[in-house]
Length: 142
Image (cartoon, rainbow, N blue to C red; front, side):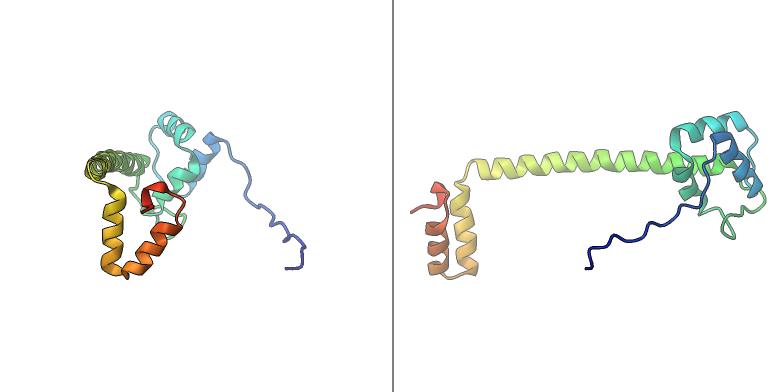
């Protein structure tokens, strides 16, 4: 490393207002019958988040085939957001259940004895004894 910071890349894209973003999407062939709804949606979602969902509908890139509507892409975005929320909710329940099971299992057992028994089945007893005596935790002390 020479200590010289890398040269800054110039940003070539120009800022577009939300109404201009809607015009840009229309220019690419996207059918937008309700401009007010499209603008309202983009004010809350952002053009770049929405553009990620446009990729599945474009053919070729930055060009929409005839018949593709803003509502179809909006539906894909809302479907994805809803699915993500449902999966996160389910994962949260699984996480809480797993944490509770682990806490309950280790709560009524001397966990350090369990760890030592697991280690002793994979390591020599001298190693386990040495590690238990070397640790700063009094629970491992003989």
